[in-house]
Length: 186
Image (tube, rainbow, N blue to C red):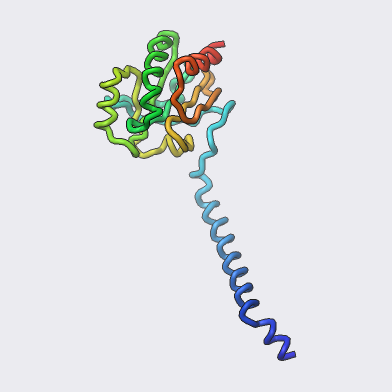
């Protein structure tokens, strides 16, 4: 009997039991932490679902709230001034904006200001003669909320406020952007 107990409590069994105990503690701790943070977790924006609302200021301090723009076709383009694909697609965005702004297109260029700096953004906007609203995501809230993994990330939103298309990466051509807008106008 004593021999059986000694063999049960040998080093490998003790290590296994300790590992099981630590794993159990970790699982319980992780589950409790996830419950505490459940209200802070955002589900990824998806086609066919309402676009997550946000409020950001533009370069002049004017406030924009996405939900207040419902009833229009909206493009939300998340970008940074140092991002090469973003730099290449901005002229196409400007052309599309000029072409469709009078028919209700709203283009919101959400700059990842928390990964950029305002002086570079201002210089980029000036050099490229951008006339659509440039919104500053200083805290990274929109990038977190929209779960942006790559720049640029573009969300096409219909008049009801639903996401109709998501384009990750770029640069998008003027033709591609225009085709997405035409789909939304139908």
